[in-house]
Length: 165
Image (cartoon, rainbow, N blue to C red; front, side):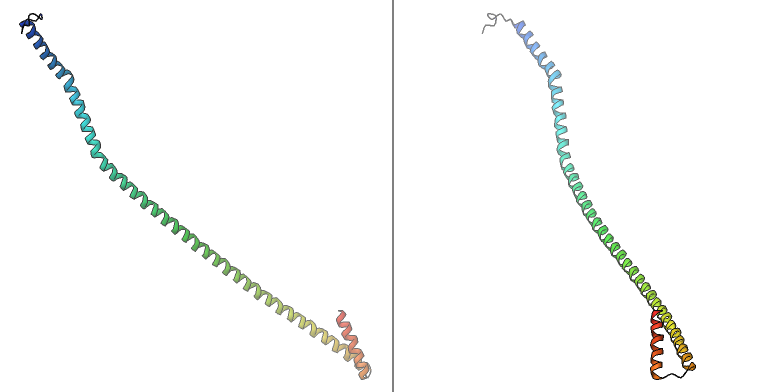
């Protein structure tokens, strides 16, 4: 093959071959190595993220379990507070009922005492009036002799007088 017909000499071919080798070395050094380093870094990051995913899943699962436990604890606490409130309310209600019962007993005792005092007063008043009646009747009997008809008349007058008072 005649390279000279193409305008190529052996010196130009060597020159072009050396230039090509230099270009390949410069491209290798300037582009391939940084690009390879970028790709290796990206591969390392992807591997890191890939390794991180199971750990994050485990943490998420752990967080979910903690949340569920906290939710159960909260529900249990709410139930405990409701039960405690109900117990307290029942105790207060029982206390109020007992207080009312005691007050009603005191009122009943006081009313009974008042009734007894009133009964005693009425009985004493009755006795006083009866004594006055007997005294009036006796004084009239002593003044003159009284027949059964007069006696009945005096008793009726005294009873009428007593009823008016």
